[in-house]
Figure: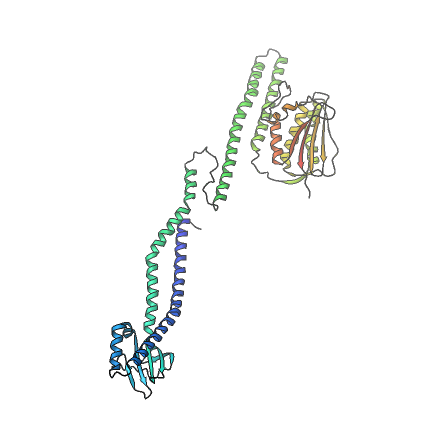
Length: 452
């Protein structure tokens, strides 16, 4: 595991530079030899040409050898230091030698370039025959001198690399620090935040490589913010909504304690039970609302039959409708009522819509529930014969705790807010309308149809 990106990059880059420089140095050494050899061979040719020219120009001089040697010593000292040269005539007599006392003989060197081993040393020779003077001119250079030149070049390159290596290290450190500055800035910004500040981190001046990381971090901040707001809202909602039923519960209990007759006491106790039921309902709705959020992802998703689920829910709440003398009916199932989602949560949606219809339908009214299939949707429809909802208030009824003035039915004002959130989680659309018979309310939830 990489503990520090900075040190990992620094060591890796310096090692890469070292390996690349070593390969480059070895390659340059080999290439230098290939370049140096032809260059030094050309020097042998030039030296032999100069000696040949001097030999011809001093043809009539009795001290030809001394003149050539003195001239080369004065004008071309490098030739005297690096090369040995000899001139031999056709009779095998040495006419000229750069070092008359030298015991090295180049007489057997072939014409042109050749490699000779003379007395244990490697020599590079060049020989040319002059037809006019009938002499053989030979120039030779020790291979050791050539190798020393290549070694000097490689050594100088290595010295330059060693001198510049600390500079490479500083430059790499500076570049890495500059590149990681954005991460340091994001870290500093997050570390200096208050625990309640969950606004997204700004994505300006952030490298493309860490934008996905910051983007995911921002998404986490958004989810945390929504979760905190939902928890905060739950506490406020609970305090707000439970205050009234708890106050009514206390009042009714006081009335029961002070009642003189059993009839009055029973009436007060009945009011207590109603207050407890209302409190239980409010708590259940609040808990459901707190668990749901559009920012949450659905879990336990599977295809299921909406009509079958509706049958189970309606059978559960039908006794409540019968108690109020309301006729509740579930229409026959369509051919295909399959949708994709969480059946438990959709069950809450069905129960809330049907329960609202029962609550706001007067006695002896009707509630009709049907599942309608189209080519792309499965529509859950509830139609009642209640007072309906005015067109200008059909958007507001989905707000939390909003209730239409003058409504006598009990409720917390949270049921339709829960329905709206569940529909959004299932990518379903909600529509309120007036039934074809002209009164009451038609409640439609259109789910995307599931195709196996």
